[in-house]
Image (cartoon, rainbow, N blue to C red; front, side):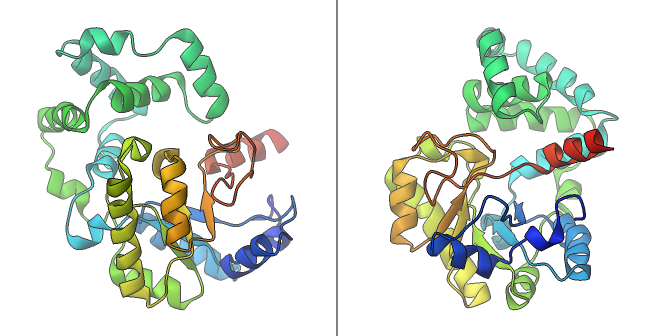
Length: 284
């Protein structure tokens, strides 16, 4: 907090006021959290409360209805069952390369793709990028689940154990909202390629997400964060119809629609916490 400058951090309400009136300054920042994670509530919230700060919390809704979002389950599996994430990547890549998707996976990312992705997401390692390319561009969601479920089974891990206390509850959302935090849209099921969905499917994703948040907080959501930074013009049209006032990207690079940084109210840039940590380490 001291590195960033507490006085620069705006509450959700003040951020939206300044955005609506075109008074946001380059020095103005806000705090955001994605993905409805219980660890954010348990670890980050007490720090925010100590400093009397409010944040935006972008949540996807299907996990609040008892469904399992395997994207987050797989992330928890990687963190809990491997000494280092590269150990997981070695296992994953070996599993993919000996499968029917092996040849396509080996050709999925060129050196130029790797350089471009590293420039856009400098907090990702080369192995991070290879993993995401294969997950998002080679494998269909069902294929990815098949590969990952096989690795989990090989390790003798039960998926139910991985989901325990992974996500927040509706009571947590209401608490945050009642305390002045902003609860925002992040889709219903967190698809990794939302921009590839038809308009009606995107509308369902955000419509159900909107209804869930409003039903729990008794407030209409006013902001959104694009899941996996995936969006298109249809997304903009849907957010506009839902009266969403601000939408966030996941990096500090120009937006896909405008080609500019902060070029549209639905293309507001964000800095990843991993980059902020690197900045702090370099400043020592």
